Length: 451
Ligand code: GDP
Image 1 (cartoon, rainbow, N blue to C red):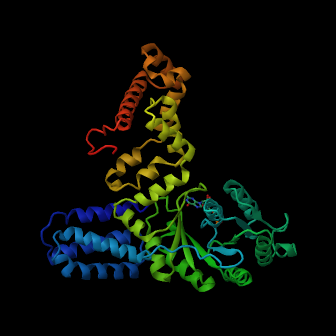
Image 2 (cartoon, rainbow, N blue to C red):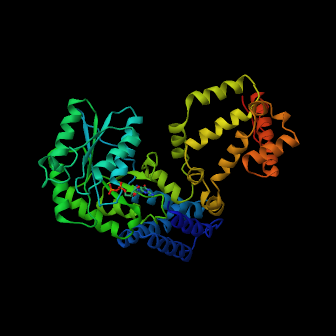
Image 3 (cartoon, rainbow, N blue to C red):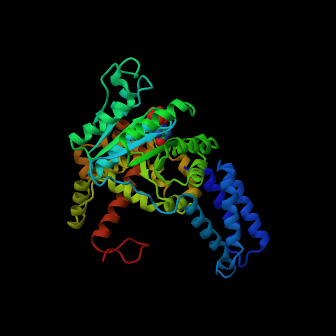
């Protein structure tokens, strides 16, 4: 996400580091680099122009010339201005005061609406809501089935027209406006509290599509109209967003496919051009690859200051509480940490998703980009295979794992003996550290330890 933009900006700021004073030439050079980085990231030209003008004005002002560390002050300014461009405050979903909250999705075909319906449904379910998805995309032959598959994966029910009704012309029940209206009535009668209406997209902006979306909007009177946009479409983002803004007057934006090598320009342009807030980000094809959009955290990610808050939230979402409590109890009872525990922890980690994605949210991730790119997710598979090749007894009493057992484990898991040895060593260290922590001695190199 925003990799090249992030790399370019952090490289620019490196040149400022440690400078006692910034000359006008320093500021000019920095602003020029920022401009280049933004343009290369496909940020719309007027947005770049305004952004750099503000940064330049502030960088030449008193807050920088009087700062103890002018370089850092410039980074702070860019951070604040990025946050502004991205929308400032986090914008949350408007929930209806009475009756079900209606959320309508709009956007071009392939933008990621159907996928998003599932993600949003699951996210709302996790927060205690009872959502239903409504299949009002009757344009594409498979759209209804696709939404049903998505709903099933997300564990969210789907309201769909009768099978066979693919368009309003071959069956009156195939009228997308009617389906949307019926879907909302259905939700009301069955006490669902959120209705997510998926609508049809076209490959390009088209009046018939816009009219249909508007008809659906007028029929269901949504609390939110979310415009879903593929972050990879680059400069086209601005025109598409403008057209949908005029066409359906959306209330919020969802950026999808931010996981790809999207240059991120859409994120930085759409909000500035339409004035509408970005509310969510979609970061993969999986139902959990989805997050609420926080301008401050995103700015921080772009400037490689990490996004530890999102990391923690994602961990919490996937964390198995019972397992965590079992580990905590083991820990306070000072029981031995075994390979069984090790395996359980690996599985917890795995549930949090891709290690690469998690590590990329750590501060300084841009500096480790190459290692991250080379990070082999299969390493976890190998470790798991090794542990699984141990007998149950070996897992709880690793001390008995001698040379011949190691050779057998290596054969069983398809790795070399030296890989088994490495794991045994790492495990012994982890075990030692757990012991020290549990006994209140603290970890070497870390002050304090457990009080
Ligand atoms: P729709 O036509 O707007 O309903 O778009 P779909 O939901 O069918 O998505 C189009 C394609 O993009 C599908 O292959 C999805 O799996 C994929 N997709 C959707 N969201 C994301 C995302 O955030 N990341 C990636 N990598 N792919 C996505």
